[in-house]
Image (cartoon, rainbow, N blue to C red; front, side, top):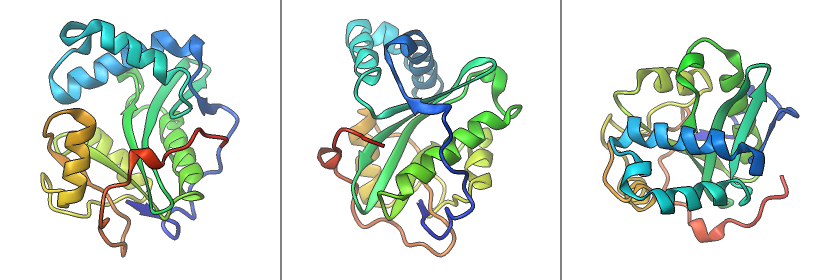
Length: 196
């Protein structure tokens, strides 16, 4: 998690970070498939290509998926899977492999998204596999820290992760120094269309 005090140094949201639009479909389609294949070892284009294509279409219009375009094109995507006054949960963070660890844009984009969310929620949380060292380093640079032992999230967050992914994963629950672990998962029903 990242709370308001730990988020004080994050960048303000810039004009290049925006919600996804119809013209982002190809990027979101490939990024989503690559992300799911890397993290969960299943390719949604094979498992259920029709449902996956439909989900990507929703991401292009639902106002909960954020993208960043820079001189190289679209270079970052992340979803907001839950948003309440208590917590915002970021999911589906993806940076194309060629840009990982080399570009400041994805770090800035995630920092800007956290800035937007922390204005509406007490904390921002996300999950990451404990073997994904590049992602762990990125989150640490933004001020996140693991709030539980690797591979062990608090029970409410693990439940939320299973609900969102459809299967158990090995998440790490992140929280800034001095914050407490969340007491219950944010309700996805509490989201409302964004007017960020």
